Image (cartoon, rainbow, N blue to C red; front, side, top):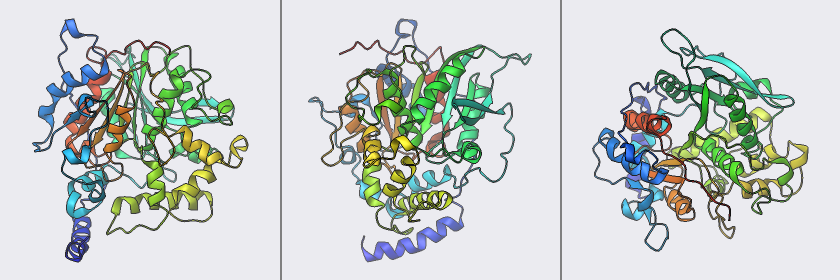
Length: 455
């Protein structure tokens, strides 16, 4: 960065903080703009559905000079990923700079929370109650459930949408509360779930560490099964952000893969879920800003980052450091790689040399250096939609094009929006964000999965 721009940034960052630009904010959502699907097209697969849905909802986005990229725009006619940053005339290296991407960074910060929800009880949410769901013989996941009811207060038949937080997040994050309350108002049952190492689950069961998706994917499948056994739950859907989206991807893979899938590391296979006879999350899976570049990020976090030069990476290092301090993982620093190993090896069956690398292989959804990526979404049998922003300062939007180029399953769709930062879509355009979610899960407007045949 040129010295002149660097010194200008020295002024911009304190001023932005002083004005409250980087403070977490609430973005309550309410009425959704429902799309119109012609009866003759009521069984649209996800990629075709996205074209129609975005076409009707794009008016809700702020006026932009930059394009929105849908699934078909992310690959060339030869099936190669397009160069996303070339289309947007930008570079990912500049996305974590306030001078270049102040709006994206601001939107990112406005929906992020540093609160873990461990020390103080959460305030009440209207229409919600706390609950726990048993997923292991001695582990119960905490959450908040809001049942959709009619005017007489009776529970109605409706899908139940599960909301997942990001890394070590929980229900103290305002965006989770805002979305949960909004979805219940629109007639959905809603479960805001706290996984291992998250929120009240961490508080009540601190001996259960995160496995970054290996065991959490099985937990989610059990949650889906439990919900579908409840009266008036028609089906289950899943909304996730950041690392929660990575865990959701691992769950989607586990839910439909062959029993002998060679992509599962040998030592991991006995402890992770196998394909289920009964499909889970049939209402669909909607992911915002999946952290597909976590291995590259791990390399970047090997050295201390500056709040001036890389504010988002610095904030992420703070999250890593706080987790290490909470669990006394040594050394207490911002390195992600040592945290991955320290958490995984807390489980005796994962405490072997190379277990952290097996965890990385299991959670890899794109090529990393000499480690190839084999399509893990080819057997996906529910609608899956990934939403990303070109100006995400943490995860390159190129990752989404790379993933879609490797995935030919018509049940998998993606959109890259011209704004939103990292998970900051409620701050960028809460009307588009909420309307897209409601239409994706509404039984009258949602996409329909294609039947996938075995190889």
